[in-house]
Length: 388
Image 1: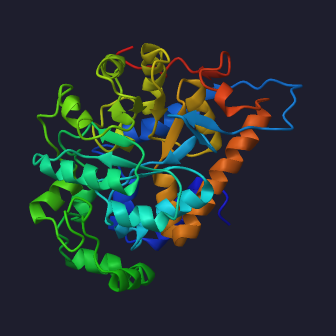
Image 2: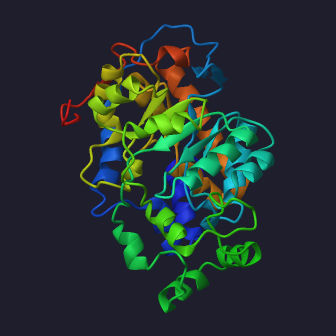
């Protein structure tokens, strides 16, 4: 029976080859940052209020003038086609059917136009990695804007890819090379292997100008390694603004002074994130960095969070410490592995029901009133941001 995110995680582990499961589940180096993301969430206690009328509960929040049914969206995740062929479109469609936004990664295995069309509605954002050849970003943004993507998420924490020891040990790289070890790994998961044979190996096609084009191998390898343009600086946002006139969100902010710089440079929102523990292993947990960032922003722009969300209570913890909404990554990938589009819908429903149940248990009736609610969350003394 699948009743928690951990249940889906265990099922995904049984259904995927080891190298695929460890790609989506693992982190950088010793994975201390990955572990801290969860440990620090669990240190936060939420204090309920009693004898409050919670017969009508409003779980909606407003983001850039739009009403979100729930205070979470699907985070951008790359190479979803290796979990299940057509994974990007399945995630987007499940999100649209569930009434939550979806963020498409630059490193998707389907083109932005196709994902948007197959989603059949809903709100989609685009996440951007800026490669050294900035023309790739320019043509992608033109296409995404034309396709109806509403907001742009610039990922800023990947000047070089994190060293992911699990991937290195598994020989996981682009282009794929089947070694005896990988062949045995794949043979032990025949269902996955048959789906891959039917759907074909995933390719990074989102940056290609034409649907039939294939990106050069070195560009594909850079996308897998998340190794981007190191010359990207705050002043580069002017170049980006010339290409994109919709909401611009900066992802990968952990230092409060970077949040202040984001406000100063006209960014519309920031995502407190350590890339799910997949980049700098020595980085603080995202939830540990959140309060200092939210305080520094002071309500001038919305603050979001990703990295470590596994329950409705976690969403409430993040809101209580200053997040308008959160982005969920690994949980919906576990759902994708377990049941495709339906599996993703089931995970979203699980989180939605858990969120509303915890709201009622806390004596809350409006999600919009949770953000930085006084006296709701108490963190243990060990939870802090070193730069605060």
